[in-house]
Length: 361
Ligand SMILES: Cc1cc2nc3c(=O)[nH]c(=O)nc-3n(C[C@H](O)[C@H](O)[C@H](O)COP(=O)(O)O)c2cc1C
Image: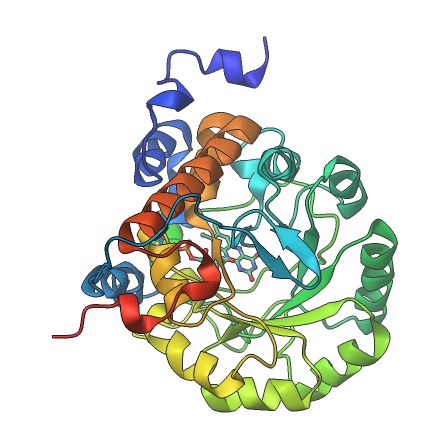
């Protein structure tokens, strides 16, 4: 019996009509500490709530009697055509969420043509993922103190055909993730982590960052000098940092607050996005993540200057509920919602989206 049929007492995937529905179903499937690890944010979770609330505050102002059918959702990113401006964000330890782990995610992404950003903390080696991939694969890098290890890893990523190296720059230390601490979240000792040394820090101490490296601009220069992959910085919130990134020959930026898992009270990403998009002014793609749960959230992000968005928790929940098919269903739902949103706001293609769709009182 495979793992999906073992789960047959659960609702059929076709019963899931929104991304939000995956969370409650996932809560039933996941061990409690794992659910707390995925769902939790840092500190008092002010920013976790704010990421979504900031989207809710943006109201739409549609135009009518325009030709909106067929809607065109495709876009080009780093020379590749994407069916929809959506990527799967790096989410660590997917072996905790489904027995097939990241392999299920890559298969789900394949059926929808959506790029998958594989976490440094993947439980499946990159070569295995690459052989199952039918859509672009990116790799998210936590720079580790051992430079030789990182350099070898980058060679493996290039050999496997990864398109982009996405360096996470918002985690000089891990945030205080109280829910996972209270739930005594621990990685099972048998969990494989083929691309990370022991990254585990003492959560009660900032001065014990484990094997994490406090990434500096000079490290970005070093990475730039040793790879031809597209170099993307994930976790930029300030336009001055965006500007500096461009001086360091970075190819793209992700406006992200790490799903509100690091610094609490940090600005919601949809609020931070416009100033960065304005500053970058089209010189490189600006992506964003944090709080995206609906097609209208994708619409609002693109209207505020994002080239594409990433989703994190939503597909992690879908993965735990339905493996590859769950991830594919989650992506199909978001794509359909986005198509509805575009047509109903009166815009036929994403190239035409701008802040004119936002209500201004
Ligand atoms: C369980 C979990 C694990 C994550 N692991 C990583 C990671 O390994 N590297 C990284 O850069 N971001 C990681 N993130 C952050 C996501 O890439 C992304 O920024 C965030 O989830 C987006 O917000 P959303 O969950 O509201 O969609 C993780 C997020 C979650 C929920």
